[in-house]
Image 1 (cartoon, helix red, strand yellow):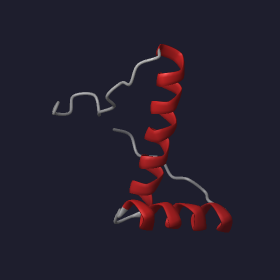
Image 2 (cartoon, rainbow, N blue to C red):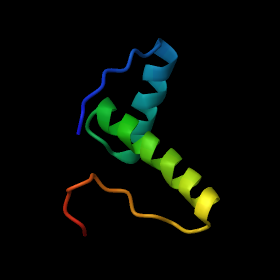
Image 3 (cartoon, one colour):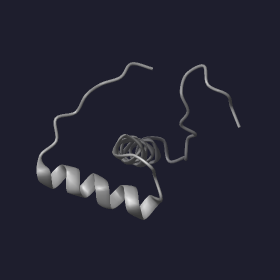
Image 4 (tube, helix red, strand yellow):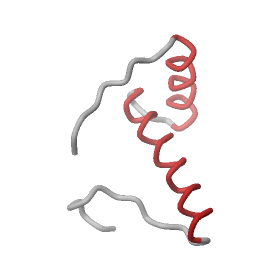
Length: 62
């Protein structure tokens, strides 16, 4: 999967750090990924009315 770099303000970094701590994640990158997946799940549910599994393309299905 392609890597991207996000330029964060102090407020955004603080928010990601709070999410990281609340979710028990190790890095702010993981917190950003978690936050994006949550947003995508919500959008998918709103669009289709069903929950959808999110996983990396080519990744193992569980």
